[in-house]
Length: 63
Image (cartoon, rainbow, N blue to C red):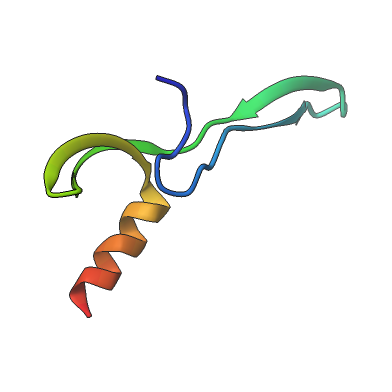
């Protein structure tokens, strides 16, 4: 399974790591994915969800 959020579709970002001398080397910022059990169409499923999406869903459930 790839590093993609099942809810928001967030993917890893790429860019440059900068050293003290400003040399650029490529690096990646991965999404903070969590395995979560969610009810989808009445059935519990395990999905990979970003921590931000999980926080948002929990906040909406509380209202």
